[in-house]
Image 1 (cartoon, rainbow, N blue to C red):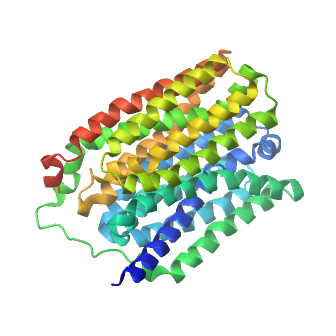
Image 2: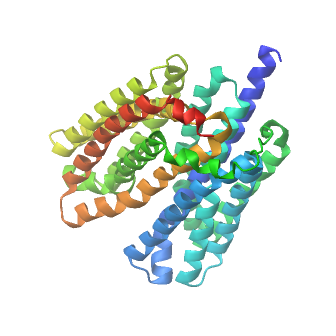
Length: 403
């Protein structure tokens, strides 16, 4: 294949997988975006609304670990298509809900649909994108997720304010429907590698990788970093309002600065990761700086405009680490087990996103908004310790023999 044809194929696959990943993140916040409408409609407490999101991420985290095995057995493309379809079904179920139980069912189905993306996405990127552009593929994958997070509340609130929340969810259902149609049209570009059948009597070896220390270090990496992310996503704006006397609009702008800078950081991180093999060093430097900035933010010694700059800086440096993070995790995944390894370790992301709001919410209830950013800084510092452990074990000969 010529270099031009390879470039086109790589760009096509990266774009399609990125679009699917953006759709997944779009659904992460469909319930949170509609809280102003769902709360009075169903007479729910904030705890009950929060429980819906916990259900989503808990189901997604458990399902993600299981889906990795399915990806390795039937191929990533079929699994990805089914997940996108389930997201659309979940939005239809939520839009037709007339009780809290029906909302729970919709959140459950959405969690099942969301569970497929990391094992399927990363398997497709590893199989269909050339090694020289893989870092850029991981970069686009992360950026598309941030775009999904940012676009969802804007889209849903815009539709809901002009119609109602049910119509907003039906419109949300059209998003995965359109994406699925596009992926099916381009299904040849996403063809999976042939499935390697296990030798007779070797079925148990499919689980051998779970005995390896590096896999659980990778899981811990995502769990810890996701707790820090959950603090920013769930209570970052509320904490900024208390610490700096910001208006809700300005605090939201600070979060937007964080997300925007994170996307730019990921873009730069793709080039940085492609030109370096010392991915652990990039991650450690980025999270060390992010932890220091979070502690400065907690001190509230700067004016409010300084807090916006700090939020942007934290987002930027953690974004830079994203592609290097994915390349480091890739080193811990044997070629015939990417679905299983990515499924298990990325379930830590959902676990952290489910646990983080509970912990940081307790800090806010105790009237300690500064503790939110102190906690974020502490967890970002812990990421450094786990990174050192992952890097030291990623190329273990035991890992390569596991499967």
